Image (cartoon, rainbow, N blue to C red; front, side, top):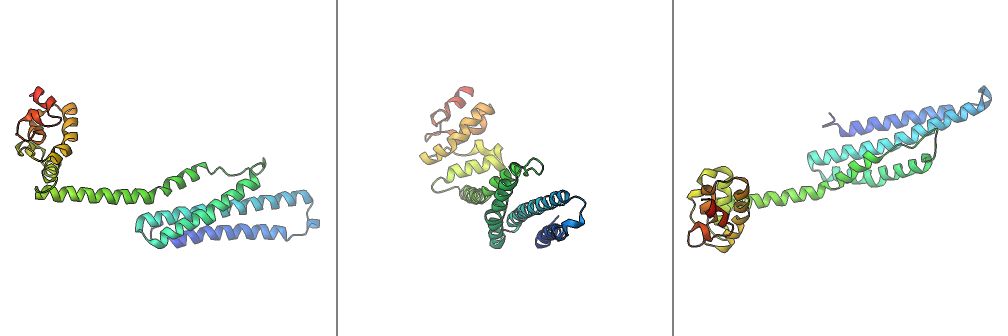
Length: 227
């Protein structure tokens, strides 16, 4: 809804804060003698002070959320810096001031920021999650390339895993793994398949040992018995 107009959306929040301040200033500028009840004027000003403070806090939260969404969408360093600045310098400070000022006020109770804080904590994990996704993508590409090549260190295991994903019916036609590394890499998927899907003929070749017999590879014992 705000794609392409993040700055305009943030400015709209600032306009709301400016309007709240203007209303408070106009009431504050009135002469107490012109009011029938001076106490009512003070309560009115206190309410407007509360509105200004809450608008400033929610405006800082609004900026933080929009900059975070902009960074997720574009990956822009400027959006990332704007998100971090809005979180640390604006939102958290404004939230603490609001709680300190209205935490014990019964008439003007402090806003509950639990959900906002939980969302901010989850967002703080996004950079680490993004790097983990990049590393996982590189590993997947390495497995695909090794599987297409089918040779080299771990190539046979990578080919077996790749075929198991895209053409599982051809796994049984693979030759026996000769490398100990290949047998270790395919052991876990073979072992899980023995328990979940009792079709031993599919993974016999991938789980076979160096002599080609199904019963000599790691995890192949259950397969041999099932066969």
